[in-house]
Each structure stands twice: as structure tokens, then as C-alpha cells.
Amino acid sequence: MSYFTNEVMRNLLVQSLETASLEEGKWKDKGKGPGSHAGEFIEWLTIANLEESVLADVERLKSHPLAPRDIAVYGYVYDVKTGRLIEVPEATAAGAAKI
Image 1 (cartoon, rainbow, N blue to C red):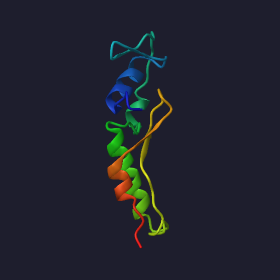
Image 2: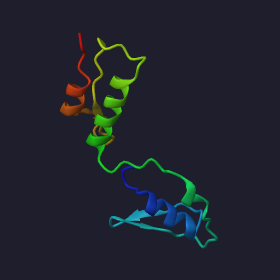
Image 3: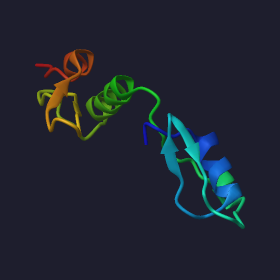
């Protein structure tokens, strides 16, 4: 969901319900319609910044009352092109075990 924003999703769905394509960095709707306004009421959970999203997730996990303080939580981004995990140092630091 890093290529979308809520606004992009909603605008595409208003135009048509067919699959859009990403062309030269812009979304193109090739559908002929009709679309729907129902997408305007959905939070699409888009990700504007991967590292910030990972950090927020780690912080949420570490602060949960059922998560033991002595358990470490690590933060990584999965690179779909290379198959590698890329550590987010701020998230790993935030997820350090507390004794």
C-alpha cells in the first residue's frame, strides 16, 4: 500500500471498479465505469513512510499490556525486489528488552 494514499484509492474507485495501472509514476484508471463512492468510507491503511510505520508497529507491540517487557521486538522492512530484510534501527532500539 505504499503506492497509494486514501485519496488516490477513493478517486480511482469513484471512476470505475476495474483494475488501475501505474504508468510513469501516476495511476491510470482504464475502466469505463461506473464507479462507486463506497470507497470514501474506508480507511485504506496506506503507508506513507515504511520506516515510520515499522517504528509505530514496534512501539505498539512493546507498549501492549500482554507483551512481556523482557522480550525484544525487532523492526525490519522486507524488500520485495531483493528478498532481503532491511533493519530499521530506530524500531529495533524501541523494541529492546527491558529487564
